[in-house]
Length: 257
Image (cartoon, rainbow, N blue to C red):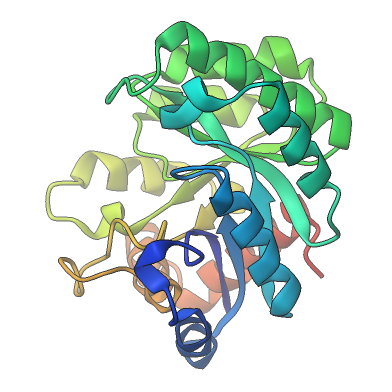
């Protein structure tokens, strides 16, 4: 039994299909899905919460992707605080820093990320972090703004081992996607080999980053099994062990029964 710890099946790519996608995940042995808000616009958050409220095995997070940090103001933060109070919301995010695409200015990304860290502390919820090409600044903000009271996960981790260690030293989990199945991802597979399984999640980031053997198709939570199988091969353990430990990790962080 596995948990897809990060997916976006409330999005436009799944209009009219969410129930079928969830059913396929259950048939593949995926016990729970965490549907992540904040990708694209504010409506992704309310859609994530609505889906979680409607489906027993689905949970939600609320936040705004760093691409859209420029669109986050006082009203948006207040709306997200209200959504975060809903019973099936298990984390703040996704939020963070993305210096690869630079869709929002760096100083705006840093300010909004700090505000979301504050919201996570205020609500006592963990935080889901998106970070690309900004590992040092992200770790520094999590340390200084989190003040040792922050729990969370770095989703879709693709950094090097030094970055992994910096996040692990803060007590964070690292989540891995279908990228670890890609032919050119040997450096990332080496990170998977070295990081303790007790600090790992698996995720799809659906509809993105579809794992081999389905690369090129739309991703969906049922495919998280391929991520877990690859993780098991890399670490030389059974799929059952990866499923058991990563599921325990997700449940521990997000409080999923």
